[in-house]
Amino acid sequence: MTVVSISNEVTKAMQERYAVPLFDVFEMNGIEGVMDALTEKRAPTIFGIYSPYAALPNCRALAAYVRCRAEDTDVPVSLMLDHGASVELCLEVLGYGFTDVMYDGSNLPLEENIANTRRVVAAAHAAGVGVEAELGHVGMGDQYDSEGRRGIGFTDPANVERFVEQTGVDFLAIAFGTAHGFYNGEPHLDLDLLSEIRRRVDVPLVMHGGTGLSDEQFRAAIAAGINKINFATSIMNSAADNMRLAAAKPEASMFDIHAGIRAAYSHWCSDLYETFGTARRA
Image (cartoon, rainbow, N blue to C red; front, side, top):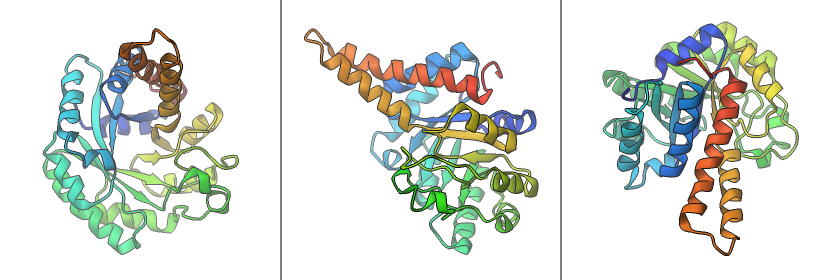
């Protein structure tokens, strides 16, 4: 199967109450680990390329590698720009074969976020590409005690209907108590806020900042309306741990060290497919 927009799969997830994961990848070994897991678990999956890496010269080649590997499975596979930092970058990767893009204008004033998102949506939809945007702002885990727990940046439900209507966005990332990276403090999700946003709009809702949440928190968020979950930090740290352990052995080879990346992705993705309810959905 060639890569496809994740739109249909995430809409199905919204209807059937599970979540489709996005896993950020940076090189071949991580991609292979995700491929191992999604093939075994028969789980629709989004490969994400994070904005700073999408701006590098090798992005086109990395995108081509994902597209090529997707041809070796009949499980739905998508390729998405994660946290597109500018309208220009979102438009640029359309030419690289991305099936979906996220434009992140969450730090901008509302009107500017709407205007920029609308530009991305117009170009992406003309190319058959789905679009995610962020309303509210998901901050960083190391600032969680000073921001996340105080509700700073949380999505205002009064704005969601207008934002979705005026932008035409396909999926909406919201802020309701998660954070990127490791949390400074215990994460607390505002499920009442999530449920209110779910009530107001019928587009799939996205959660960023999965690292550090318990299986119970994931399942509660999905039950309250989350349909796509981005997850990266724990996988990357696990890969780094595996590589350090392998490199510490006197007989370690380059292949042993690289295998640690693949193993981390395969392990984490397999477990998360079960937690998110994505396994056996293909």
